[in-house]
Image 1 (cartoon, each protein chain N blue to C red):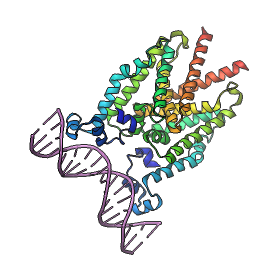
Image 2 (cartoon, each protein chain N blue to C red):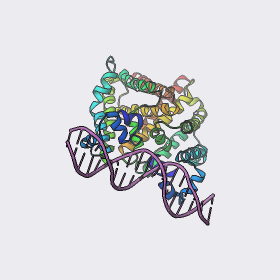
Image 3 (cartoon, rainbow over the protein chains, first blue to last red):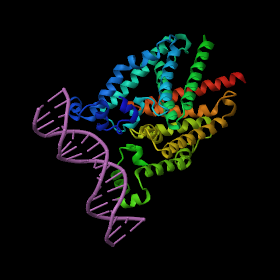
Image 4 (spheres, chains in turn blue, orange, yellow, cyan):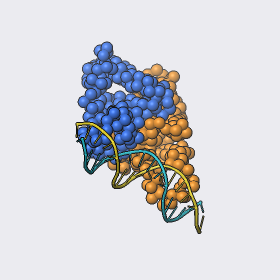
Length: 186
Length: 186
DNA sequence: GTCTATAAAAGGATAGAC
DNA sequence: GTCTATCCTTTTATAGAC
């Protein structure tokens, strides 16, 4: 997970994996017949660990459903800052790096995104009447992911977290405008 | 440009470049001393060709400044559809694929993004009073890029252009809400 | 299951003739 | 400027002993 996050898939060699894990070639290949199988394992670990690794830490002391969304985005901000704007979302990076992934890999990437947006959608549903009646919660949840990934991409490219912050600010404005519209109608 | 767009940088070999260009190794290396120099040339070509290659075709018959923004997004939609949801924004893909790019490459990627958002910002300035007084046009222009890149990423990952469409719809809602807020204050 | 050694191929880059 | 041939390294993966 760490190496694919830091260096990407193609730029991580089997030798890198052996060095980092202190394994010998025979041991690694005994469990993972090919490099792609390691990738599958990593993507499955992200998929199965989203609650424990990502959501629970980010939401430890947050109750408000809308603030949970921005707390999650803030967790990504911390990752960006702590890596000097070099690393962002591991899934997003892999999704764009792998141009013609195997169906199994592509579906795991998609499944990771689905789990992420499903978590946001639960927050939106919990927000109840603070959003306009008829709001497409699924589309809005996807838009939160959109803003996160686009913001991470620009922050990494410019090596400046301010690009991520501006994306989050715009998303906040979007939620504020939606809340105002919901209130006006009520 | 084509090969880096279709396959990415690392997955495009010198042999691929020679085959596609019908050049021999000596000729290519005479002009581009290394593979990275080819990448630099490609990024410079995108930078210098944004008007002729991207903006002018997309805006051929569009006058309204806000609609120009959505016409540009629609040009990306066409790319997504025509490639069966495999290719999106070449700059965004390279930006996330290259984890530790040379400063020259990183700055070219950033410059490409800057030119793109500068074009959007000109549209926003032309929109005048349709946006609330005090709107941060630069941040909003970046948000358009954010939505585009995030939407492309999800459409590619899910192999479904509907993910891009939903991102654009949400952005449209954002602009509609801003326009309504501008009108209410006036 | 793990070890070392090594195969087999692909990759970026260079040499030197023309 | 372009040609062919090839070097050298890296990379994924395998073989076979223990």
